[in-house]
Amino acid sequence: MAPTDENTQVDQQASPFGTTPPDPPGAGVVAQGGRMPRWLPRAMVLALMLIAGFQLGSWAFHQLTGLLINILISFFLALAIEPAVSWMAARGMRRGLAAFLVFLGSLILTAGFITLLGSMLAGQIIKMVEGFPDYLDSVINWINAHFHTDLRRVDIQDSLLHSAWLRKYVQNSATGVLDVSGQVLGGLFQLLTVALFSFYFAADGPRLRRALCSVLPPARQAEVLRAWEIAVDKTGGYLYSRGLMALISGVAHYILLEALGVPYAPVLGVWVGLVSQFIPTIGTYLAGALPMLIAFTVDPWYALWVLVF
Image (cartoon, rainbow, N blue to C red; front, top):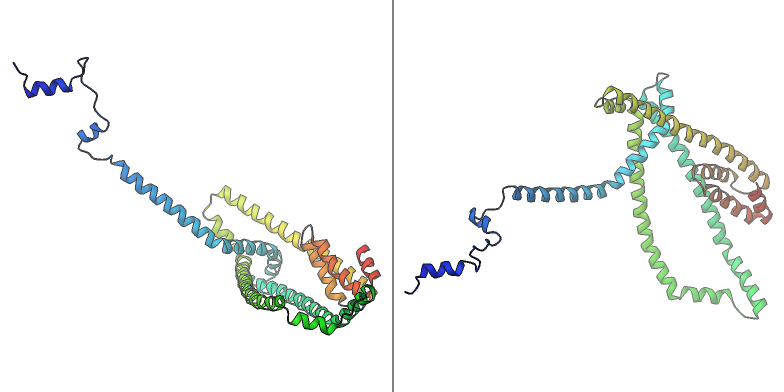
């Protein structure tokens, strides 16, 4: 008797050992209706939200890095001037007015120093430009005498004026002027930002401390206030001690340069005092290089005296 179709299908599905083969992978899911787990969509959305939040936070941090640095600088400047502001406020002056007077005095001193230094540099540059033809003539005469050439200043000037590299240099300088102008405007904007934040931190220092401590438990409030007071004392003491040392150094160098007859002795004394005390490690060498250079234009031995001093 021929087997039926049903028996044939059963024989094809049965294994040689009489057992049924295992179900293929995923058969259980299909048997449950073919639906994905309920937690998978929420996990995918949460992962996408975390990635988007990280990217947004990274972008915002990079965009606000300059502002955060300016705020940090403003905070330390406010710590530096707060002792003077607090001293004036303790004697009956309004704290905002005291902060304004301290800022105004610092601004006047800074502007005066920059003006004196700029006038000194401009005077030296003018002297160098005016004396350049004589210096060039002496160099040409030395070359002609030692190498038996027949160079003339007029020929050298014509070759320089018609050279391609000079035209390229002028074009690059014009572009550089625009870049420098943009950098100057950006620097002025940063200085204004730092000044505004510093003024706020100095004028409303006590109120800012109370606002920060109001969200902390009493034990934490005491620690924050103690750390704040230490920061004010250390920062202010460092800057004021450096200022006193800069004054002593500036006066001493002014006396030396004036005795030697070196021009611009007052501004050079201020330069040596400030740069040597407020720029760490290399400030002494930067401060001494400029007066040595100016003294060398007067007499090379004067530069040696400045170096020894």
